[in-house]
Image (cartoon, rainbow, N blue to C red):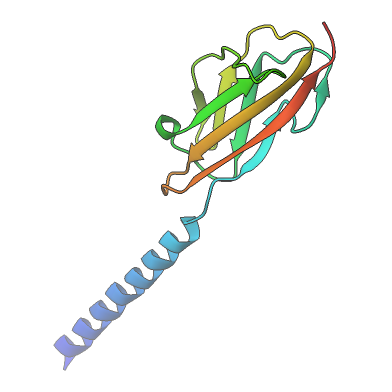
Length: 127
């Protein structure tokens, strides 16, 4: 009888672990959405920022992500290499930008392989 009780306890432990494991997978199965950006979405800045920094709602895979910046004439701005300083963050450096409107296009793949993309604008008002 003791052996049977031990086996039942072991089975319960295994089943509990499986249920917790499945629940844990479900909790990370979401898309990485843009949480905030610098420069801020829709903002007007007096001085051109040195970089575009994007923070997402969950970790992203830099090898499957991109950030592009375009000027008011839809011409690409030469940005630096994509950096990944934190699991939820991507960044590209910017050259000195003249006054004008700019659009940031981004596409990311979260660590759970979901893809999202978007764009936003910012304006440089100063020299």
